[in-house]
Image (tube, rainbow, N blue to C red):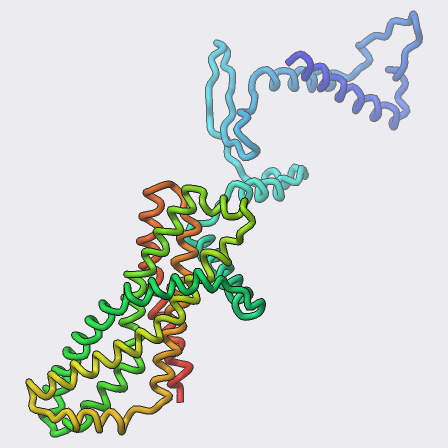
Length: 362
């Protein structure tokens, strides 16, 4: 405290000395001769009042060192007890002081600001998608052993559930179509409507939902566990790229497996619809098959496979991205698994909308 008061005293003295020199005022010489006593009575009274005010303020208040944006000042009362009061922090006030507080205020604000977890996870997922495309498409770098293992895992795990779901969805639509179109005598178009509905929308979306819940959650949980247990860091230490070894094989496996699953599910769904129409409503199977062959085109099957390819890639990338950004131990793994499934389901319908706009906007 004494050192700061002395520094302030020296600063005020030097400022007053400059002012006296400019005004050609020699009543208080800047460098008195040796042996000559300089009287302080020639110094103006305002100078000593300023020094006294600075010393008083230095003793009365001090700023709490909790960062550049502190909003508290501790004042020492006459009894010696510290009293805390809030100080209004306005960058406009400090901007008028000319101490570059404007830039400092925003620098401190953005230095302590962290983006929401969802934002940087989404950014990492898009970055991961770009790295997978670069390695698989441009560099043609793919671990075939891991890819085949993932295909063998994705197919059997999803095929039974996808076929069972498609069959019951097909029977539900058959009930609705047969009931309504029988009233107007349009039973011969039921097969075509079922075929178009299955190929264009129902089959790829149903298989994608099953894949997200069955395989996507497993991928997120597996990679999340590897991330929190530092197994991914060990792969980097051993010289293996996690994208090449963990992410790219799973993305390729899901993207290739979903179109095949869609074809099988479409076949089973149409077979279940034909069987129900024959047994319940007396509509001939030949009528349903002829109607489907009349309205369906090879491009519709291509659209189904293209949607399955896109849905499989999206599900795998989201699951890998959310798994590799897992933090917080077992709780974080559970949260990442749940979030990956939810985000995947939303992404499926969003991508389905844009693909439908592209394929059927005629």
